[in-house]
Amino acid sequence: MKSVYVTGPDQIEWVEVDAPTAGPTDVLLKIRACGICGSDAMYANLGGIPPRHGATPLGHEPAGEVIEVGAEVTGFAVGDHVVVDTMAFTDGLLGSGGAQGALSEFVVVRDAVANRQLKVIPSHIPWEVAALNEPMAVALHAVNRTAPGARDRVVVFGAGPIGLGAVLGYRRAGVAHIVVVDIIPSRLAKALEVGADAVINSAEEDVSQRLIELHGDGSSRFVPGARPGTNIFLDAAGAPPVPKIVASIAQHGATLGIVAVHKKPVEFDLGQMLASELTVVLSMGYPTEIFEVTDDIVENWEKYAVIVSDTLPFDQAIDALELARVPGAADKVVVLHE
Image (cartoon, rainbow, N blue to C red; front, side, top):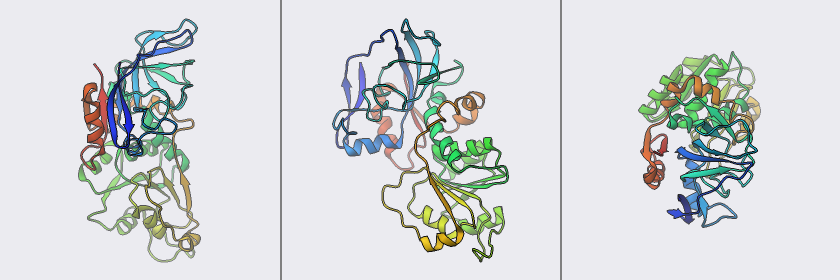
């Protein structure tokens, strides 16, 4: 079968590999959709992931159809549509250094257990929306790390897929108000469409002043001077100035969550943060959230569909990877199989 591999530094190629087969405890999937993640480009830049340098299969945001069920497996039937926990495979992380990648025609799930590696979804959910399950779990974990409450006023920096997923997560958590900050008008429009209360174009507006207008003045004897009454800041942008800006404007007791990947060291003024007692939490992956988010995707799939900007056929998977690498060219790219 055909599979997309990193074959060397900045080298991504089609590779012919043996199609997997299912044993008695396995489930064989026909991959129907696979999203492109920013980390795919990072893996390519590195030339693969240890210990698979130069031979790394890509694709870790899949949705698939069950085409074979091992004799000892229960909970699945041929024809089921499923979403996938790519971190629960017994042969390594799917598409992130493991033996298989989802930018392939088929994937075998070894030692398959219902609701451990796979969860069945209704067949009416579009494949490109089902493929959002993995990144939306990343977004939900970031939301959970900031421990939102009903009275919280939230700011999400970055209206890419993770930022938009976080908006949906915060809205589901019942927070009081959500603001999204970005510099691309089309992304800000999507943020409003999925549930943000307000947006700020940071290329045109003073973020702190606008947040004071939206969230009130959060100054106190600990941190005097006008500053926003924002409780939670989430960095889903990865822009170097964001953490520093938050540290300079945070009200006393606020939380900064960081889910974005910062490729260079970020400077914090600890003296400045000491007065505000800013809590900083980081988020990676989805320890419990991978299938927690599935029910919401099923129930509100039309809102999640807004996140997908481009779909390309499987035979253009390498083009899809290149499209996703160009800043501003596409928001969320998904590869679809016939």
